Image 1 (cartoon, rainbow, N blue to C red):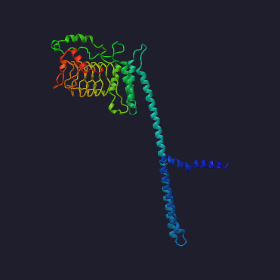
Image 2 (tube, one colour):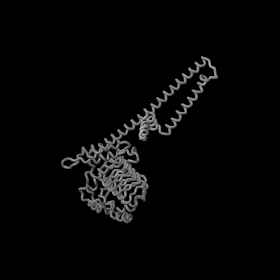
Image 3 (cartoon, rainbow, N blue to C red):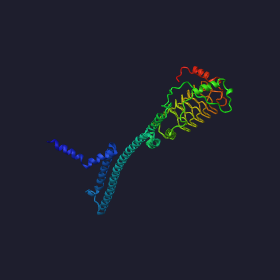
Image 4 (cartoon, rainbow, N blue to C red):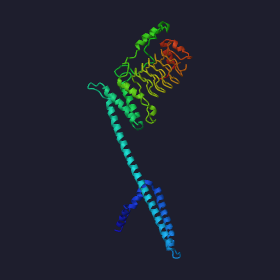
Length: 410
């Protein structure tokens, strides 16, 4: 029975205005600052009390005789002090009120910001889901509805660029590159051609007009016949509209404005990009290996450290492209235009450079082309000697390069 009043007393103290004010101050300012403020206010009150007593001692002192005028001056001085204290107290109360108002505004702003972020996140997620559905749109016969798919592709591009700090960048890039791999595979899914490519067996490309076949290798005719049997299965010549749209989005993705965390390596390996327009594309470290880039335009593209190994780049336009450090092993550049390209440190082992134009190529060394296949028609930069290997017929070059690269997987 005796404990209940104590409990009620504690509840009463918790509900008192002083306790609520103390709790609010500690929440706003923190316990150390609140304690320091309380100690400071207490010291000010004590000093004011001592000063007031000292000031009023002449009035209540019995030993000091004061005239009426002196007592009147003291009372007026006391009134001035009280008035000043009232102003200070009012200012203090106003300051505390401002602190509470600032705290409430900050909490309201933070709550509103969180709500907006959650709402925006939900909207982006909904838009992303709708765009993914559009990528798989087909008609009643199962044929792709390109107009709907294009809408999904461009919607994903907007989501990437409008998401806070490009948070959706890596996800969008992975979705789009997966779409290309699925819808433009190389070799085509309908083809019976094995994805395993034989060691550098490109189709024969006729020498430029004016070149005499009889003046080249004595086995050219045999090479022509052999090349005809090895001709790569033809495709449409240019990418489908939706595939080119994805490539355009990749070109416009503004990678330099993307924070490092959401960045992702573009994976376009084993894709059919014949005739694709990738001029000035940022394909740094991209994976384009084992793909078909025949007659594609890669002029001035950034392909530093990219993987093009085993790819078909016959007749590709690679003028001024940056291929520094790129993996070009066993790539087929037959008839490609590589003028003024940067090939510093590029791995060209096993590559086919027959009829390719390498005039003005930067960073290219004799050591890099020592283990490649070429022809007398291959154009090299000034000052670079043609390997003796290139004077031999095609079959002999294959055997020699195979011996030099023995042990490598291709």
